[in-house]
Image 1 (cartoon, rainbow, N blue to C red):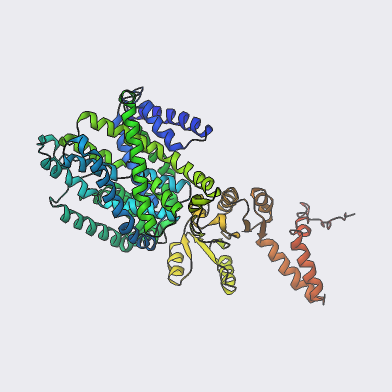
Image 2 (cartoon, rainbow, N blue to C red; image 1 turned 90 degrees about the vertical axis):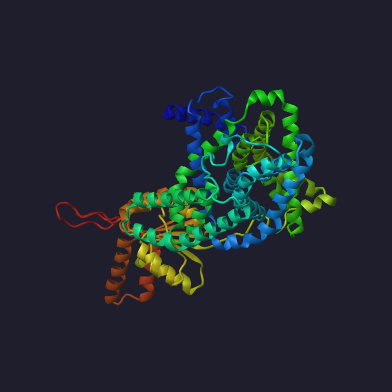
Length: 599
């Protein structure tokens, strides 16, 4: 039963990841180990492995969708040169190097080339999760890694089509069951027998998805948002994600690439940040199942019996892929440290290689022993990647500190990526108060970001050139995307008291140092908002009282400077004088001023 299997998987995974966390080891490695334990080669605790793998595939789709949402078309355009200068040499170089190294062992050139294609692919899911968890997606080595991964995903169709061609070249006649018409889950049979035609069609589909995503999807979401129904918005976003992935899979491209393109097409729309927030709760849970499912592939008995061969294979793959990526990156002008970090980041074997490997094994390009060696080595390279990428920066720093040739590994300016928005003001709500504040900030050239849930307002102000985003200020992901941790102030000018309280609480947890200003209606809310973390609370009824106070005293010829001084004192004391005024007496009798009694 699937439900029982999921309970077992999550129970074991929770315990293992907790133990790895206490040992300060990456959670991704814990997920892989969990898969080994519950899988068919471990304790065999999961009965329906295929159903778990199906959910895991959806997890990868959602993960890549959110990664696309964190990008933009402008950032992708910047990566195109990196695909040519670094991505292409990485794929060709890795394939060639592995071909030369395995030709003598596998026996034919075609089988060696197939082994090279297997190793050339890297894990989009693992690399992008590590980059996202560490906030390194926008760093130079993060951009290199993403560019290489995107190119590899675009070459998926050609690699799949190469399987029967290589089998023919090796003189192998695969059985009918091994033909590509029995495509693995997530990949439809390629529609074209010519690899060049398939690549051209693949590029055309990518372009069509991006154009439709940028033109059509925002229009649909705008109509959905006007309904003010969060469930409908979430369902539509999931439909866009899964639907685009299904379209790309039908032409032989990967589901992951389709999901990434769906996210990318939404990234620059006014709904991108809110879409990211709605999908985020499902991302990590489903993506975790993918890493668990990869761990299920590892045969512990085979690994123990062939430990030496597998260890040498893992070491060779990691070193070779690191060098083959780092060298063209360095030649392209990146610092040695950045080049090494990028190379180590994609030094593992990718999830698509499992699909490609199974097709090759069915076609006769790999025998059972070679296939098991590949599986064991591939899973271990995935497990090694988080450890290597965590240790490498510290190693570079230690070597750089010794001077000499180690100075090449010093951190270069820009290695941590650009700061993005910083020292800005975030305004939640674009009603009268938010609009006036934005106008004042604009007059003085203060950078500000506006969060608003009215789709008509967002569209109108966006056309006017404002940095306004459709997003719920009570959601942590929306505030993070707006740069809350780097902001100078967060101003909450919405009318919903419950949402105001949630927003203050979330903002204070995310950014302890940011100044939080809150506009509220009533004095009764001041103490609670301050307790939640607000620095300044401005109640509308008090400001009204101060205005009346100013006007009435002016009628009695009280000097303006005296009135201004008193008003300033009241504000400085957080309206203490007015807050001390007791409520009316139930009997309608006179009320004593503070410090006085009625006789």
